Length: 401
Image (tube, rainbow, N blue to C red; front, side):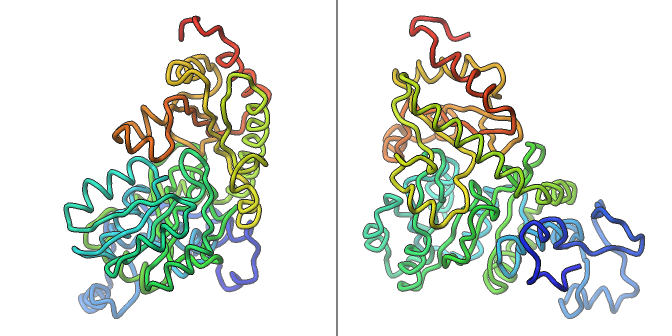
Protein backbone atom coordinates (compact mmCIF):
# COMPACT_ATOMS: atom_id res chain seq x y z
CA UNK A 1 0.00 0.00 0.00
CA UNK A 2 3.04 2.32 0.17
CA UNK A 3 4.39 2.09 -3.40
CA UNK A 4 3.20 5.60 -4.33
CA UNK A 5 3.91 7.19 -0.95
CA UNK A 6 6.14 9.96 -2.30
CA UNK A 7 3.35 11.13 -4.58
CA UNK A 8 0.57 11.16 -1.99
CA UNK A 9 -0.72 14.25 -0.22
CA UNK A 10 -0.69 14.59 3.56
CA UNK A 11 -4.28 13.49 4.12
CA UNK A 12 -3.89 10.46 1.85
CA UNK A 13 -0.80 9.36 3.76
CA UNK A 14 -2.67 9.91 7.03
CA UNK A 15 -5.32 7.43 5.91
CA UNK A 16 -3.32 4.95 3.81
CA UNK A 17 0.37 4.86 4.78
CA UNK A 18 1.56 1.86 6.73
CA UNK A 19 -1.30 -0.41 5.72
CA UNK A 20 -0.32 -3.96 4.75
CA UNK A 21 -3.39 -6.10 4.15
CA UNK A 22 -3.41 -9.69 5.26
CA UNK A 23 -4.83 -12.58 3.28
CA UNK A 24 -8.21 -11.77 4.85
CA UNK A 25 -8.48 -8.63 2.68
CA UNK A 26 -9.51 -6.29 5.51
CA UNK A 27 -10.16 -2.62 4.77
CA UNK A 28 -9.47 -1.38 8.31
CA UNK A 29 -6.06 -2.15 9.79
CA UNK A 30 -6.11 -5.31 11.96
CA UNK A 31 -5.18 -5.41 15.61
CA UNK A 32 -2.53 -8.05 16.35
CA UNK A 33 -2.90 -9.01 20.00
CA UNK A 34 -0.21 -11.63 20.33
CA UNK A 35 2.95 -11.73 22.40
CA UNK A 36 4.90 -14.08 20.11
CA UNK A 37 5.03 -15.53 16.60
CA UNK A 38 5.42 -19.05 15.23
CA UNK A 39 8.37 -19.88 12.97
CA UNK A 40 8.28 -22.44 10.18
CA UNK A 41 11.35 -24.19 11.52
CA UNK A 42 14.40 -23.73 13.74
CA UNK A 43 16.44 -22.23 10.92
CA UNK A 44 13.88 -19.47 10.35
CA UNK A 45 13.75 -18.72 14.07
CA UNK A 46 17.55 -18.44 14.17
CA UNK A 47 17.60 -16.16 11.11
CA UNK A 48 14.94 -13.86 12.54
CA UNK A 49 16.78 -13.53 15.85
CA UNK A 50 20.09 -12.95 14.05
CA UNK A 51 18.54 -10.23 11.92
CA UNK A 52 19.39 -11.89 8.63
CA UNK A 53 15.72 -12.47 7.81
CA UNK A 54 13.00 -9.84 8.26
CA UNK A 55 9.86 -10.73 10.18
CA UNK A 56 8.18 -10.77 13.56
CA UNK A 57 9.92 -12.19 16.61
CA UNK A 58 8.32 -10.95 19.81
CA UNK A 59 5.82 -8.14 20.32
CA UNK A 60 8.05 -6.20 22.65
CA UNK A 61 9.84 -4.98 19.53
CA UNK A 62 8.05 -6.41 16.47
CA UNK A 63 4.29 -6.13 16.11
CA UNK A 64 2.42 -5.50 12.82
CA UNK A 65 -0.05 -3.04 14.34
CA UNK A 66 2.68 -1.02 16.03
CA UNK A 67 4.71 -1.13 12.82
CA UNK A 68 1.76 0.24 10.83
CA UNK A 69 1.52 3.20 13.20
CA UNK A 70 5.28 3.79 13.01
CA UNK A 71 5.28 3.73 9.22
CA UNK A 72 2.32 6.09 8.98
CA UNK A 73 3.71 8.65 11.41
CA UNK A 74 7.13 8.56 9.74
CA UNK A 75 5.42 9.15 6.39
CA UNK A 76 3.61 12.20 7.78
CA UNK A 77 6.68 13.72 9.47
CA UNK A 78 8.97 13.00 6.54
CA UNK A 79 11.46 10.95 8.56
CA UNK A 80 13.09 7.73 7.43
CA UNK A 81 11.82 5.62 10.31
CA UNK A 82 9.88 5.74 13.58
CA UNK A 83 10.07 3.89 16.88
CA UNK A 84 6.87 3.89 18.94
CA UNK A 85 7.11 3.96 22.73
CA UNK A 86 4.86 3.50 25.75
CA UNK A 87 4.59 7.26 26.41
CA UNK A 88 5.89 10.61 25.27
CA UNK A 89 8.23 10.82 28.25
CA UNK A 90 9.67 7.42 27.37
CA UNK A 91 10.24 8.69 23.83
CA UNK A 92 12.47 11.43 25.27
CA UNK A 93 14.19 9.03 27.67
CA UNK A 94 14.80 6.45 24.93
CA UNK A 95 16.31 9.06 22.65
CA UNK A 96 18.66 10.34 25.34
CA UNK A 97 19.80 6.96 26.65
CA UNK A 98 20.22 5.56 23.15
CA UNK A 99 22.33 8.46 21.90
CA UNK A 100 24.15 9.75 24.99
CA UNK A 101 26.64 8.37 27.49
CA UNK A 102 28.08 9.46 30.83
CA UNK A 103 29.96 12.71 30.40
CA UNK A 104 27.79 13.97 27.53
CA UNK A 105 25.91 17.25 27.65
CA UNK A 106 22.52 18.60 26.52
CA UNK A 107 21.58 22.20 25.79
CA UNK A 108 17.88 22.87 26.11
CA UNK A 109 15.35 25.62 26.64
CA UNK A 110 14.10 26.82 30.00
CA UNK A 111 10.63 26.60 28.50
CA UNK A 112 10.04 22.87 28.84
CA UNK A 113 7.28 20.63 30.12
CA UNK A 114 7.85 20.16 33.85
CA UNK A 115 8.37 16.39 33.65
CA UNK A 116 11.03 16.84 30.97
CA UNK A 117 12.99 19.19 33.22
CA UNK A 118 12.77 16.68 36.07
CA UNK A 119 13.88 13.88 33.72
CA UNK A 120 16.99 15.84 32.76
CA UNK A 121 17.79 17.09 36.28
CA UNK A 122 16.88 14.14 38.46
CA UNK A 123 17.53 11.09 36.31
CA UNK A 124 19.84 11.78 33.35
CA UNK A 125 22.10 13.57 35.82
CA UNK A 126 22.45 10.29 37.75
CA UNK A 127 24.07 8.79 34.65
CA UNK A 128 26.49 11.68 34.32
CA UNK A 129 24.61 13.49 31.55
CA UNK A 130 24.62 17.24 32.17
CA UNK A 131 22.07 19.83 31.04
CA UNK A 132 22.31 23.57 30.46
CA UNK A 133 19.15 25.67 30.16
CA UNK A 134 18.93 28.80 28.02
CA UNK A 135 16.14 31.19 26.99
CA UNK A 136 14.32 29.66 24.02
CA UNK A 137 14.75 32.58 21.62
CA UNK A 138 18.22 33.74 22.74
CA UNK A 139 20.21 32.11 19.95
CA UNK A 140 23.52 33.57 21.13
CA UNK A 141 22.90 31.86 24.48
CA UNK A 142 22.27 28.53 22.73
CA UNK A 143 25.57 28.82 20.86
CA UNK A 144 27.49 29.96 23.93
CA UNK A 145 26.15 27.06 26.04
CA UNK A 146 27.48 24.40 23.66
CA UNK A 147 30.55 22.63 25.08
CA UNK A 148 32.98 20.16 23.49
CA UNK A 149 30.94 17.33 25.08
CA UNK A 150 27.53 18.67 23.97
CA UNK A 151 25.80 16.04 21.84
CA UNK A 152 22.30 17.37 21.32
CA UNK A 153 20.08 20.42 21.48
CA UNK A 154 16.54 19.73 22.67
CA UNK A 155 13.51 22.00 22.42
CA UNK A 156 9.74 22.22 22.30
CA UNK A 157 8.19 24.58 19.80
CA UNK A 158 5.60 25.83 20.50
CA UNK A 159 6.39 25.52 24.19
CA UNK A 160 4.16 24.31 27.00
CA UNK A 161 2.33 26.37 28.23
CA UNK A 162 3.46 29.81 27.00
CA UNK A 163 3.40 28.96 23.28
CA UNK A 164 6.83 30.43 22.58
CA UNK A 165 8.16 29.74 19.08
CA UNK A 166 11.78 28.84 18.30
CA UNK A 167 13.43 29.30 14.91
CA UNK A 168 14.08 25.64 14.10
CA UNK A 169 16.19 26.35 11.01
CA UNK A 170 18.42 28.73 12.94
CA UNK A 171 18.93 26.28 15.79
CA UNK A 172 19.66 23.49 13.29
CA UNK A 173 22.51 25.56 11.83
CA UNK A 174 23.88 26.26 15.30
CA UNK A 175 23.67 22.59 16.28
CA UNK A 176 25.21 21.21 13.09
CA UNK A 177 28.03 23.75 13.06
CA UNK A 178 29.09 22.35 16.44
CA UNK A 179 28.54 18.70 15.51
CA UNK A 180 25.38 18.37 17.61
CA UNK A 181 21.98 16.85 16.89
CA UNK A 182 18.77 18.90 17.01
CA UNK A 183 15.81 17.18 18.69
CA UNK A 184 12.39 18.84 18.34
CA UNK A 185 9.30 18.03 20.39
CA UNK A 186 6.50 18.52 17.82
CA UNK A 187 3.56 17.62 20.07
CA UNK A 188 1.67 20.92 19.93
CA UNK A 189 1.74 21.40 16.16
CA UNK A 190 1.91 17.79 14.94
CA UNK A 191 3.04 17.15 11.34
CA UNK A 192 -0.28 18.60 10.22
CA UNK A 193 1.02 22.10 11.06
CA UNK A 194 4.81 21.85 11.34
CA UNK A 195 7.50 19.73 9.69
CA UNK A 196 10.77 20.09 11.65
CA UNK A 197 12.78 17.84 9.32
CA UNK A 198 12.28 20.31 6.49
CA UNK A 199 13.82 22.96 8.74
CA UNK A 200 16.89 20.89 9.62
CA UNK A 201 15.89 18.87 12.69
CA UNK A 202 17.55 15.48 13.16
CA UNK A 203 14.96 13.84 15.43
CA UNK A 204 11.29 14.57 16.12
CA UNK A 205 9.59 13.52 19.37
CA UNK A 206 5.87 12.96 19.96
CA UNK A 207 3.53 12.27 22.80
CA UNK A 208 0.89 10.43 20.77
CA UNK A 209 -1.34 10.73 23.82
CA UNK A 210 -2.24 14.26 22.73
CA UNK A 211 -3.41 15.28 19.25
CA UNK A 212 -2.47 12.03 17.51
CA UNK A 213 -5.01 10.15 19.61
CA UNK A 214 -7.28 13.16 19.76
CA UNK A 215 -9.84 11.75 22.16
CA UNK A 216 -7.90 11.18 25.36
CA UNK A 217 -8.03 7.40 25.25
CA UNK A 218 -4.47 6.02 25.25
CA UNK A 219 -0.91 6.74 26.32
CA UNK A 220 1.95 6.49 23.84
CA UNK A 221 4.91 8.21 22.22
CA UNK A 222 7.16 8.11 19.19
CA UNK A 223 10.65 8.99 17.97
CA UNK A 224 11.19 9.75 14.28
CA UNK A 225 14.50 10.18 12.47
CA UNK A 226 17.15 8.55 10.30
CA UNK A 227 17.73 4.83 10.00
CA UNK A 228 21.05 5.14 11.84
CA UNK A 229 19.90 7.28 14.76
CA UNK A 230 16.37 5.96 15.25
CA UNK A 231 16.12 2.76 13.21
CA UNK A 232 19.23 1.31 14.81
CA UNK A 233 20.15 3.15 18.03
CA UNK A 234 16.76 4.12 19.46
CA UNK A 235 15.22 0.87 18.20
CA UNK A 236 18.07 -1.08 19.84
CA UNK A 237 17.35 0.62 23.16
CA UNK A 238 13.63 -0.05 22.87
CA UNK A 239 14.19 -3.71 21.92
CA UNK A 240 16.49 -4.36 24.86
CA UNK A 241 14.96 -2.17 27.55
CA UNK A 242 11.33 -2.71 26.55
CA UNK A 243 9.44 0.61 26.82
CA UNK A 244 7.11 -0.66 24.09
CA UNK A 245 3.85 0.70 22.79
CA UNK A 246 0.96 -1.73 23.17
CA UNK A 247 -0.67 -2.98 19.94
CA UNK A 248 -4.08 -1.75 21.07
CA UNK A 249 -2.81 1.77 21.69
CA UNK A 250 -1.02 1.72 18.33
CA UNK A 251 -4.29 0.75 16.65
CA UNK A 252 -6.09 3.65 18.35
CA UNK A 253 -3.36 6.05 17.21
CA UNK A 254 -3.63 4.73 13.65
CA UNK A 255 -7.29 5.69 13.68
CA UNK A 256 -6.38 9.06 15.19
CA UNK A 257 -3.95 9.85 12.39
CA UNK A 258 -6.73 9.40 9.82
CA UNK A 259 -8.50 12.53 11.06
CA UNK A 260 -5.48 14.45 12.38
CA UNK A 261 -5.49 17.20 9.77
CA UNK A 262 -9.21 17.90 10.12
CA UNK A 263 -9.11 17.94 13.90
CA UNK A 264 -6.01 20.14 14.23
CA UNK A 265 -7.57 22.75 11.94
CA UNK A 266 -10.72 22.76 14.07
CA UNK A 267 -8.75 22.96 17.33
CA UNK A 268 -6.75 25.87 15.94
CA UNK A 269 -9.86 27.72 14.78
CA UNK A 270 -11.41 27.49 18.26
CA UNK A 271 -8.17 28.49 19.99
CA UNK A 272 -7.84 31.49 17.68
CA UNK A 273 -11.38 32.62 18.52
CA UNK A 274 -10.78 32.19 22.24
CA UNK A 275 -7.46 34.02 22.14
CA UNK A 276 -8.98 37.06 20.46
CA UNK A 277 -11.90 37.05 22.89
CA UNK A 278 -9.64 36.67 25.93
CA UNK A 279 -7.58 39.69 24.89
CA UNK A 280 -10.72 41.78 25.29
CA UNK A 281 -11.47 40.63 28.84
CA UNK A 282 -10.61 43.25 31.49
CA UNK A 283 -9.48 40.68 34.07
CA UNK A 284 -7.04 39.03 31.67
CA UNK A 285 -3.56 40.47 32.00
CA UNK A 286 -2.00 38.77 28.98
CA UNK A 287 -2.83 36.13 26.38
CA UNK A 288 -0.24 33.72 24.97
CA UNK A 289 -1.16 32.52 21.48
CA UNK A 290 1.08 32.68 18.38
CA UNK A 291 -1.85 33.60 16.15
CA UNK A 292 -2.15 36.97 17.86
CA UNK A 293 -0.23 39.96 16.50
CA UNK A 294 0.76 40.66 20.12
CA UNK A 295 2.73 37.41 20.29
CA UNK A 296 6.49 38.14 20.07
CA UNK A 297 7.10 35.34 17.55
CA UNK A 298 3.91 35.85 15.53
CA UNK A 299 5.76 36.39 12.23
CA UNK A 300 8.03 33.39 12.80
CA UNK A 301 5.01 31.21 13.57
CA UNK A 302 3.47 32.24 10.25
CA UNK A 303 6.66 31.25 8.44
CA UNK A 304 7.40 27.81 9.90
CA UNK A 305 3.91 26.63 10.84
CA UNK A 306 0.83 26.16 8.69
CA UNK A 307 -1.42 26.88 11.69
CA UNK A 308 -1.17 28.31 15.18
CA UNK A 309 -2.27 25.29 17.22
CA UNK A 310 -5.01 24.49 19.69
CA UNK A 311 -3.41 25.70 22.94
CA UNK A 312 -4.03 29.15 24.37
CA UNK A 313 -2.74 30.32 27.76
CA UNK A 314 -3.63 33.48 29.60
CA UNK A 315 -2.64 35.25 32.80
CA UNK A 316 -5.44 36.36 35.08
CA UNK A 317 -5.12 39.46 37.25
CA UNK A 318 -5.10 38.43 40.90
CA UNK A 319 -2.68 35.47 40.88
CA UNK A 320 -3.52 31.91 41.89
CA UNK A 321 -6.78 32.78 43.64
CA UNK A 322 -8.16 34.44 40.53
CA UNK A 323 -6.85 31.68 38.26
CA UNK A 324 -8.48 29.01 40.41
CA UNK A 325 -11.72 30.98 40.40
CA UNK A 326 -11.80 30.83 36.60
CA UNK A 327 -11.00 27.12 36.60
CA UNK A 328 -13.51 26.22 39.31
CA UNK A 329 -16.27 28.14 37.53
CA UNK A 330 -16.27 26.14 34.30
CA UNK A 331 -19.12 23.73 33.57
CA UNK A 332 -18.32 22.64 30.00
CA UNK A 333 -14.53 22.59 29.93
CA UNK A 334 -12.87 19.64 31.69
CA UNK A 335 -10.50 20.40 34.58
CA UNK A 336 -7.63 18.13 33.61
CA UNK A 337 -4.00 18.49 32.58
CA UNK A 338 -4.34 16.46 29.38
CA UNK A 339 -4.49 18.28 26.05
CA UNK A 340 -5.26 17.60 22.40
CA UNK A 341 -8.62 16.06 23.29
CA UNK A 342 -11.88 16.64 21.43
CA UNK A 343 -13.07 17.90 24.82
CA UNK A 344 -11.66 21.29 25.86
CA UNK A 345 -9.50 21.13 28.97
CA UNK A 346 -8.29 23.70 31.47
CA UNK A 347 -5.45 23.56 34.00
CA UNK A 348 -3.33 25.68 36.32
CA UNK A 349 0.28 24.94 35.24
CA UNK A 350 1.96 26.30 38.38
CA UNK A 351 0.25 23.67 40.56
CA UNK A 352 -0.14 20.81 38.05
CA UNK A 353 2.09 20.28 34.98
CA UNK A 354 4.89 22.42 36.45
CA UNK A 355 3.99 21.95 40.11
CA UNK A 356 6.98 19.76 40.94
CA UNK A 357 9.43 22.46 39.89
CA UNK A 358 10.96 24.80 42.43
CA UNK A 359 9.47 28.32 42.48
CA UNK A 360 12.70 29.67 41.01
CA UNK A 361 12.49 27.20 38.12
CA UNK A 362 8.89 28.19 37.41
CA UNK A 363 9.86 31.84 37.47
CA UNK A 364 12.67 31.20 34.98
CA UNK A 365 10.20 29.42 32.71
CA UNK A 366 7.69 32.27 32.99
CA UNK A 367 5.06 30.18 34.78
CA UNK A 368 3.20 32.69 36.97
CA UNK A 369 0.62 31.86 39.65
CA UNK A 370 -2.07 33.57 37.56
CA UNK A 371 -1.44 31.51 34.42
CA UNK A 372 -4.22 29.31 33.02
CA UNK A 373 -3.84 26.93 30.07
CA UNK A 374 -6.67 25.99 27.74
CA UNK A 375 -6.60 23.15 25.24
CA UNK A 376 -9.35 24.17 22.84
CA UNK A 377 -11.53 21.21 21.95
CA UNK A 378 -14.13 20.74 19.26
CA UNK A 379 -17.18 22.14 21.06
CA UNK A 380 -19.06 25.22 19.87
CA UNK A 381 -16.66 28.06 20.59
CA UNK A 382 -19.44 30.34 21.84
CA UNK A 383 -20.18 27.84 24.58
CA UNK A 384 -16.50 27.87 25.55
CA UNK A 385 -16.53 31.66 25.78
CA UNK A 386 -19.62 31.57 28.00
CA UNK A 387 -18.00 28.95 30.19
CA UNK A 388 -14.87 31.04 30.73
CA UNK A 389 -16.85 34.27 31.12
CA UNK A 390 -18.49 32.84 34.25
CA UNK A 391 -15.17 32.93 36.12
CA UNK A 392 -13.82 36.06 34.47
CA UNK A 393 -16.87 38.16 35.40
CA UNK A 394 -17.41 36.71 38.86
CA UNK A 395 -16.98 39.10 41.78
CA UNK A 396 -13.55 38.89 43.38
CA UNK A 397 -14.99 37.95 46.78
CA UNK A 398 -17.26 35.24 45.38
CA UNK A 399 -16.46 31.69 46.51
CA UNK A 400 -14.87 29.22 44.07
CA UNK A 401 -17.57 26.55 43.77
